[in-house]
Image (tube, rainbow, N blue to C red; front, side, top):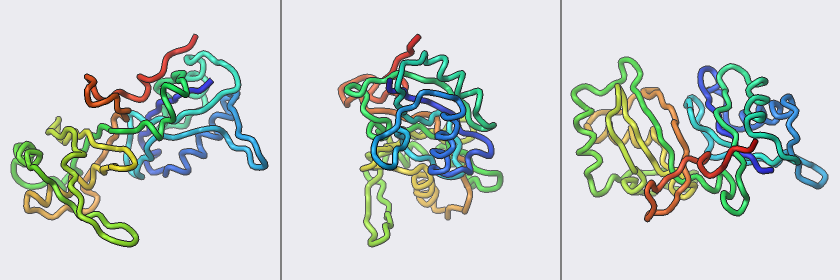
Length: 235
């Protein structure tokens, strides 16, 4: 049985990095006494696949990982057993059975993600910056310089910003998140602030990832589907 787990990551847990989060869930799955499947060979490991890694300091309402079980377990029971051993700051939102041929792995499926970005007190740009978001997004190109270990390159990130608008006291964004076009919300916000002729401040943003999506195809409506929508409950 292949299962897709959706969970939230809030509070102090936002400071736990991706690798430590993976190790945490490996221990939690053992404590929950779920019949998790292991790989073969001399160094067997749990068969798990996490979706897009979450940056340290970022909270989330929609994180995912897949795991394989050696027998069928009702999805509601999986949720209950995991939630019973979770620490404060992590909550299991849902468990869904997924099929290999239909759903692939969580990591391979990731195409887009929703974010909400708010400014920390005293870090917000002066003026009515909310009214200028539409003009920023109306540009044909939004070029940035991306630095790698070996070189720098100029990239147009406008095609990777699917949505960007003022929301509450911050900014809602839907950004490309595949490995080939992964776009960080911090990069988009820094570019916007510079477009306002301001200099981005350090630690200016509070970021929450709200959902992670698979691409259903440009001819589909909606084009993007939450990863949990590709699975189903099992009783």
